[in-house]
Image (cartoon, rainbow, N blue to C red; front, side, top):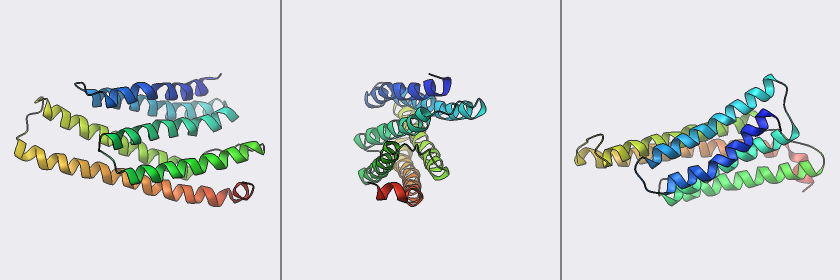
Length: 197
């Protein structure tokens, strides 16, 4: 297994640790979960960069890299729903898009074709990463306030918590719009595979 594929597998392996850190309520758990998410996101950047620079692009990488992204991002979205940080409707949209794209990829693979992620899929992934990292930062800031490490009066903290929650929701919905757009483009570009389904 080459280095880019090892990084892809590492991304998948980091997910359970991130989920545990996110859902267990211990001091600085948002920081720990956010760092694990950030590390996993960096593997996405480096595996693609190394694969292109060293000509190590493989069929496994073309299939596993976007799959690892889906596992990472969907895990965080589901945890955020559990923590009441994300609208469940958004997660249903994201899940629908990802299952639809994966189904098309599986049909194509059965016919001997490997479909790599397109530009819009990458834009969708980047906006999701930015949105989710922002929510981690917002929640860790609020956690620091709750621990009195950053002393803010309650009269300020209550509205600030509300607006940070709204800001996180807006960023996640922006990423959701890109998920819809990229899904539509993906279906359009792979009409032949859909006919074969």
